[in-house]
Image (cartoon, rainbow, N blue to C red; front, top):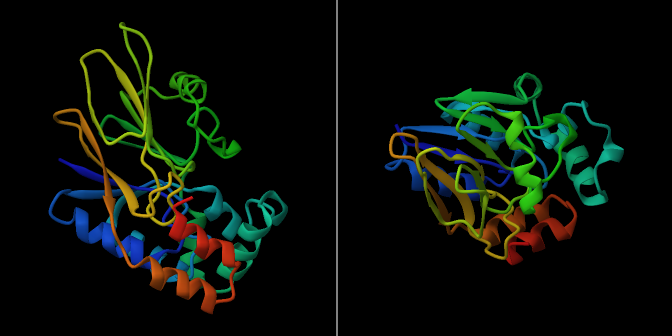
Length: 241
C-alpha cells in the first residue's frame, strides 16, 4: 500500500484540494501529521476534508492552540491572531475532533508525529543534522514521519553511519537502516518553493518521494486578506518562506 503523508495544511483549502487531487491516483490512503488549522482562511473546511479522507491523523501545536491546550502567549503575534480568528470559525464537532487527536500514531512500520518524537508536546523543530539524529531513540519503528518545520528533509542511521538528506526529493531505503523523514508543508511551505509539498511512502519497496503541487496561491492569499488576518500570512504563501 502506498500512503500520501500530509502535514501543516494550515487552513489552506486551495493547497489541500490540489494535493488530494494529485495523490488520488497514486496513494491508497492518506495520513496527516497535524496543523490542519492556523494561518489560513479555511480552517473548518480543511478539518472536515482531512477528517473525511485521512486514515490516521495526529495533533500539531496549532490543534492544541485552537482547542486551548496551548496558551495564546506560546505563539508569535501573527499565529496568535490567526488562532483567535480560527477558534471563532470552528463548530463544536470540529473542535471536539481536533481536541481528541493523539500526539503520535503507528501505521505499518512508521511512527507519525507532528514535531520531534523524542518529546512530542515540546514542539521542537527538526532542522539540523543533530536535531534529527537525536530523535532516533524515541521511536521503535523503522520509519518516522514528521512535519512542523515546513521543510522537506530526512535522516538515516545504519551500520554504514549517519546520513542527513537536505532538500529531499526521493529516498530509497537500504537494508539495515532506519529513517526519519520531514515531509514539508501542504499549506505554507518554507523552503523557498511556494508549491504545496507532501510525501508518497511505499513501505513495500521502501521508497519516499516528496511531491510538489502547484495551486491557486493568489486565491488563498486573497482569502487571508479578505478575512483581515495578518498580511504576512498571505505574503509567505507567495514567497514559500
